[in-house]
Picture 1 (tube, rainbow, N blue to C red):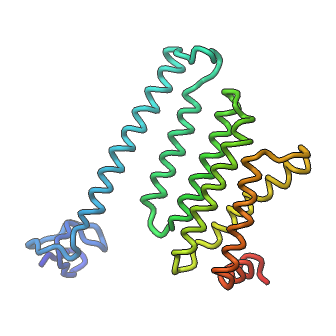
Picture 2: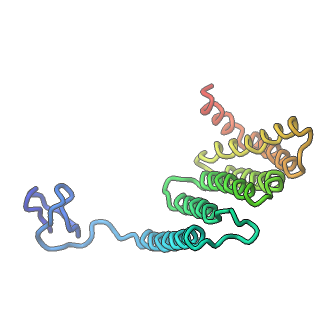
Picture 3: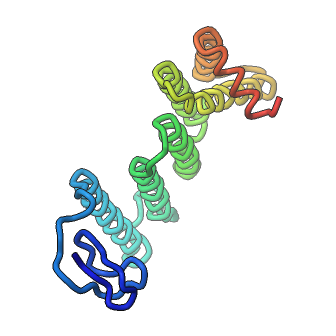
Length: 222
């Protein structure tokens, strides 16, 4: 057993410093008090490796763009490394969400998809395919999130997924309604996204009616 010469307390396990005063412990080392989490250690190593790779790509990209002056052939005035940095930050955010404890699958999928959609719109603006993004890519991504969250709601026993499903349904319907009144028409992808939203909302009411009502009561305090 180890002992702190200043706090006069005995510490079991293999601690090197006193948990109270952080002084060096005296005595013999015993078996670890807590078991080693090998799986967590491996995940930590993988995370550090990918983080190092992301930093390497980011630094090299910024150096080639701003210091060397390498630009994309068709976009001589575009600082492509800024977009690269934004994508890498989004990627790293997604990785961090995967490692963050207490975050459900629905939250991870919904948050990462919304960040990706926003970044894709910025990229599309600079590269000139904004219309295709708004008419096809965005509604397709939202429809995929809605379907995924509906499946997660069906298998979720803790009731932590319903809020993400209802939020995704809201995001799938409101833009379609706005486009219908502003543009007097609705692109096919948005029409499909709206129909999926309405159908799955009806499915949520049929299969999880009490959970839907409880979620509305909780969010709107009714």
